[in-house]
Image 1: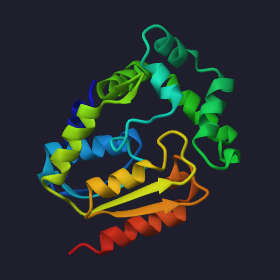
Image 2 (image 1 turned 135 degrees about the vertical axis):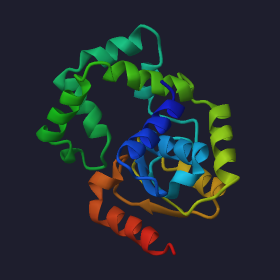
Image 3 (image 1 turned 120 degrees about the vertical axis):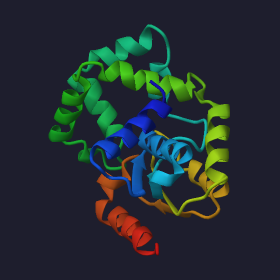
Length: 211
């Protein structure tokens, strides 16, 4: 299951809902890469992009995701789903680790237990990277496709992101000179959860700026 199939699934979902107008896509992390893939494959279906800490702009990723790519060890780690390890992962997503509440840990454990979820997640990761980080050719192909047909874009990053480092924001600005880029202080990988009002304000500004 690569990003192409996930992007096509998003289009199929819109079709099933009867929504054929170009839509505003918002994506975080891997979701940002899926949003860009959908735009590259079906430009007629995407009106704008709002990306937060999106994969696709640099090779560097947290060691935890690199390890998941390893045969044997990766599947074993994904299958563990202990509360201790899940709590550790949740805390790594925020500049303020207290945001990794019991409720969020409970939800992460519930989602991890969905049949096929771990396998699908690992396959998606393997389609774009491995132990050395994300694949250079994958990034180059995706960004080239995006640059060929720009769309109104907002890119947000947390200054304390340890999953995908904030240095990727500079690469994003170079790849998409038409985009608005914003670095949020005291924010980790989940800006939409850590700074919800600010992220909502920025995205609303993007949408309201469009004709």
